[in-house]
Image 1 (cartoon, helix red, strand yellow):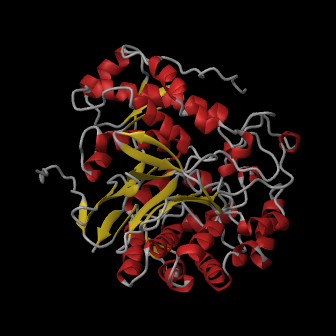
Image 2: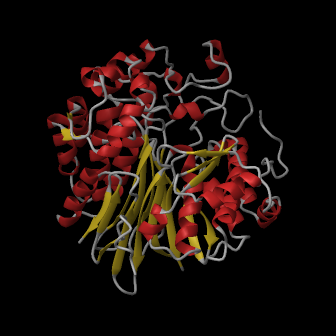
Image 3: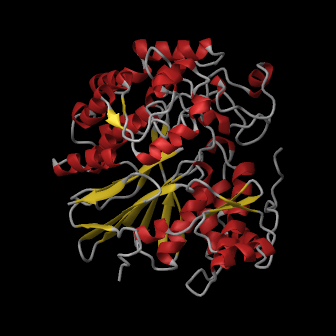
Length: 529
């Protein structure tokens, strides 16, 4: 029985349709579309458009997008809406500009050509049923007339204010009166409303061609960027459908988008976890330790071997093979933390997610991101577009799978997930949180399938993340587990802000029931009818 004294909330239940997002206005927009006869794709586009306005530090039309779509009775397919580097972008060119080891978040070179609008329009053209002007109506209203800033958005906004202040154009929009908006304060982005009107009228061409594209390219050039109008023109049809990759966990098939996303790392973590008994008999410290060690191994391989699929052929089949998984799992010592190492290969030197299920049974797992908080912080004052910073993922190492190159896609952290049983979709799900996402997939699915938690309880459970030589933990991790983990050699860092966020919808086909969860670490909710 649910503990109603826990100050938590139970999963949301409905029978016909449901949407779960990390912002209440986004959930409301998607529910409105579902209630009006729209399908999962329509609802997702309406919801993400709203979120691009009301949660500007996490997502925007100047970002990228990935999705997994499961049509009723059909095969799940993956949508890659990630942007490419400029045609003139090379390791040599960026080093000549003064960069050495990495591409800074605020550098114009961190801006790959945004792929989100190309993805939205491809998804809508293939599977949408309502016109874009109807789907964008609420987003345009909030952009032009304002919306109240919610608590989690306000907290994150304040934390990034000093960085935003360095770009005069971003500061003008996002630091009204010289400060981040407070909870409940109204905020507007009228230029984004104008962009959405253009896209509704002209499709992807309204963003990637004409005056809007010319202005965006000119602004990036004024900052020292290599992007051109031609790069924007070429990106109009950049989004494309691809085959998902998958692996089994606890008797279910877990589907992910293939590289250049880090979904492969999520599957590798799950494959390693499957070699251990992750059930209720495991102690809190053991569970955190095994997950941390699996995460370190998977991320080490991700960073060394994953990039644009053209640069890492065969990597999926290799890393998910029994030989590799058995080798990596055997390296985990339950008594101590160890540094990760590659299998036997040579070593090379802020996001929103939503789930939708409609009355016809179509399911969509959808993620849209500008990477860091407020992306690159670079805002074009003529179009209002805030550019993402996904190009900061590129390496400046010749020969590395993720080395920057002309028209190349960087390795991505954003990964929608889909769980199927006997070929039938049973749960679109996703985890937000930048680098944490692949690790978060492992924690969330283990909670649902190994511990039998309902969706909301699995989301609300204390989180941990092994990164950068530190094991980040949330305050709810017990003192006993902390002492045990430190004795094994983990360097703990208790986080002052939550680790990630998540949404999911479980489809119970036998009972005709939908159960949805939306992470309490964010402002959002799951709603249905």
